[in-house]
Amino acid sequence: MSEGELPTTSDVVIIGGGIMGTSTAYFLSQETALDVVLLEKNKIGAGSTGDSSAILRHHYGDQEIYSEMAWWSHQFYQQFTEHTDEAIAYQSNPLVRLANEDTPGGAYAQAGYDVLSDLDIPVTQYESDELPEQYPMIEGVSQFDFGISDDEAGFSDGADAANGFSRAARRNGATVITDTGVTDIHHEDDAITGVETDAGRIQCETVVVAAGPWTPRLGDAVGVDIPITVTREQVILLEPPAEYKDDYPSLVPTTALPGGEWYIRPDFGDGILVATHHTDDEVDPDTYDNSPDEDTILELTEELGEMIPELRDAGICGRYCGVYSTTPDHDFILDQVGPEGCYFACGFSGHGFKQAPAVGRIMTDLIRDDATPFVDADYFSYDRFEDSPDGHGKPGDNV
Image (cartoon, one colour):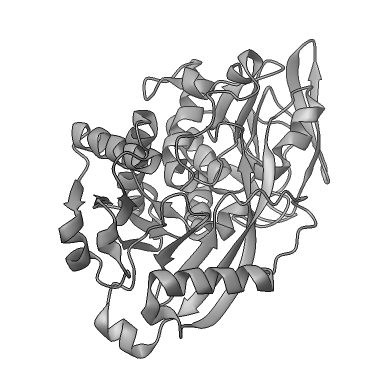
């Protein structure tokens, strides 16, 4: 056990020291007088958060609620030092959705343009003949009818941000305890009474389960079936040839081909990150292989070389795997479920990091006021799966 002694009582116990747990700890400790304890079984930001590509985009098709949350969260990340007195890694890099008319991808891209325009979030539509000038590194880019540029997109570092939130929460008075797992959640008369840890019990009336891929196991402890599928996603880091870096100082836009199961963004420094996306490779979060498959590496590098020929000679300078925790509709669960005082923040489906400050704010509102003026929290209710196992239904786009 480290970073604090285990208390015997607390008002709120947060389980999980990833970006969602630490954000919630920060906002609860910043905006309420509640005693807050954050428990992490490993190190802060060691799970999915540390493996996140940490893309900060705002384009979500017609899902305005996500665009609003992402924009608010992005402003928070950009002003992270002013809010938390902590510095985090950050880099601007526009995201582009390349698309053709009269296709599902085209409809999704256009809907996102309309939403961002209505919200006054910077966005540009490039027509086919404008694309080669904007994205000269992409082979045959003019074959697309148009591209929607999420102009103010960027990226950060997941572990960096989670640790920043954690340190700020501690300064606010929260207790942060690492290397201490939760083995059970106690409840009596349909109300939370405490949590059991490796180091002892904490009595509390409120628990926030933000344990990423381990959340379903903790849901079982309170009789709640959390519909999450855990999948292994594979990442490689490339070192572009020197000539390529000279020709394209920004390296690549953040993008993916329509319907593709992989995406790219620049990495900090002068590398390029290439990652799979929703590949349906179900795994156990405790035992999955953290090294990408050789055939996947070959497939990613070949497809990237077809898209950007000048990267065919790029060297591989890093490789790892992480996991997504995905709901049937790819939408979050932010709700009080099961015994009174039991809250879940989970199911972020590969697009959670960019929303984390908003999630922390929403969870704080729900715990303090049982409602939030920030968004329509019913959208993230657990009840949607009681009406249909698919929740809101299949997501409109897989990229």
